[in-house]
Image (tube, rainbow, N blue to C red; front, side, top):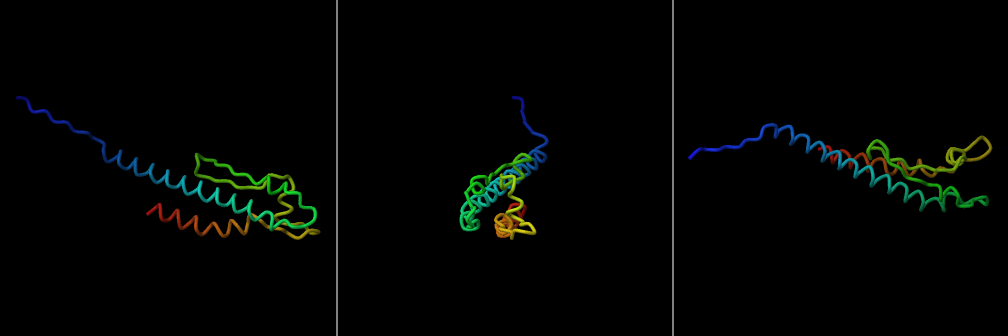
Length: 119
């Protein structure tokens, strides 16, 4: 009887590729999770942040979410043309920041989650 053996070459490269893709999938999941949380918190806090008489709710309704760079970049933003004035203020109007305080809160947890995945 003849002896037959099978071998597969390149398993090391395949294993490294799979591990790399697993990390990217984990990173995408973390980006999606924290971007979505940021949008939800912004929508929840908009009613308490914008309390002046001219408040119509348009800014709250315009809070959007998007993903770029294959899911590695998450974007949460305000969609009105005047939102930068509301967020940062002008010389005649005090700032009513909504996204920056929430971003600063979320940032530390996001970084720690990324570090955990990269280990």
